[in-house]
Image (cartoon, rainbow, N blue to C red):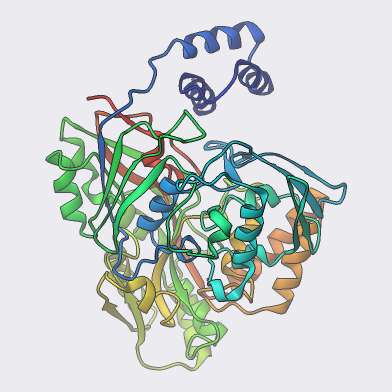
Length: 529
């Protein structure tokens, strides 16, 4: 059974997919009607998810500076928090990445894909009892277009020039056509809130499967099941407890001893040790996530393109993949797109470790003295080890890198996107356009390499409205080359998401969208004991 057919049958078993939809997708995949019918019946008779119990997650990524406002969500911890209590208009299918309905039950574009009409689901209640209306959706989206909101989705929302109602439908008018719009609305910051969150963006009131019962930044968050949830295919446990565990050793100990049911960010170096525990299951998912070293292109000494190239050639990616990820990933090429994205630009030469080229560009840059790199254990699993490996490989090119280990608490507010050279990670985005719009568009709040190029911005906007896929693919190739050769991104590896759970945790969905089942881990799994 392929991953895709396994996904389809799992969706049937969970009651998430009708017979008609299953048969249509199976046929498109080349499965005969007779075989598909048998598969459907078998899946439909599978064991139903068990309800009840208290699910405990031990997660890295929490900070005392975490904001309750979904617009400002930064960390892995808050990513899952938001998924627990909130919904977006659109979600993405776990294996294909295609858009599927959520609070918007359907949508229709104009012929030029510049105007989109969304039908908003009826009968949905917020946690405070208020019924969802199109006005709540409009005000939510409008809030994320306001620079004062500091929304992580601001780069995406700037392409929308008008947000209005047409009766009980939502109409979005774009500055130019964009066939990817539904996928852009899956951005995890765009949680639909009562009155758009304008009254109290920190209230944590949404339409999701769980209600927030307590939240202490950097410590824990607790939830209870939403009895009025509009969906029956999620939220199987009675309550959820998310415990901040930024220390990798503490997470492993907690899972091994049964104190928690699930942990994220398993260091690949500890996988073999965890596998020995009879009660533990390793969860490894390939996707779009990537570990990065980021330089600010507008800050000395990194405003020198030759220095940036020197630092890129000075990295031994293969050794880093082997030593840091234990092979749980793939080599990166200094642009944030891999083959899981539609219209991936094939044939770009892989950048390899080359001390001679690094030394050439370093000399040409005129720089002398050490280069300060800031890192932390929370940047990504093995980030400190990766920085030390980088330091060693750069020495062979005559480049001295000073590694400064920063504390985990406050790293995302005090170092990332603040200091000019640091380590970080990205979970990927549903489309190339969204990845570039979020982190490489000149006006994006999360442009963490300070890549400020008018020609890149222009090309990004042109590609967004180009409906000819061949032309659009060529544009994405040009953009990839700009970032690769002239940007401040060093991307040594795309990581597999390596997490772990107790064997009594069932229903885990491997999702290419992002880590921890695209943040939906607590909403999708159930406890078998």
